[in-house]
Image (cartoon, rainbow, N blue to C red; front, side, top):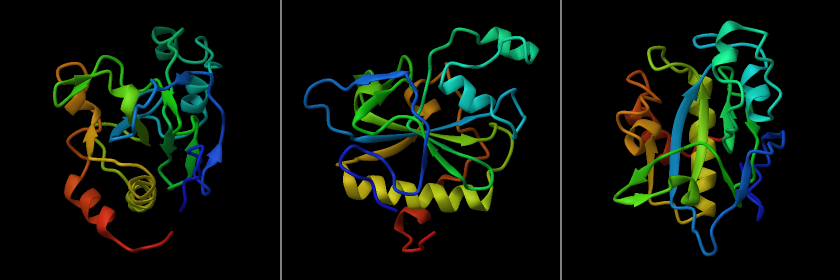
Length: 183
């Protein structure tokens, strides 16, 4: 997998989200933030996550959707349960994924991070296909940008966020960073 100068992954389906803006001048991409998402919670099918990230989620389609109507959020990438990779925001732009956040005393993680959403939930194991795709994507991002660390949303917004959750296997993820496996 390769990431081009604009920050588009050559193996991702690109679906532009309006929920992004310019990064601050001279903001280097130094952090990967791993999240999980499912809409409605615990449902791993359908287009609700895509609809949320492109501002077309129908609040009447499910009772939960009414509680998040009006949210303007996005991520750079979304990895489905089958390993399919979608991209919503080029890495050169700031996606709105982290919210109020800080890492190593530095606030506003959206300014200097790439957000990767895994289709899942805190209490459900992620799939082999997701770990394979995440490893390939992370290796490509580390090769393109001066990334210092990978963290969970819970690490940069403790007490506010819990994802990617206890079922995310950090050891497996780190092994995937070192892998030469191509998918």
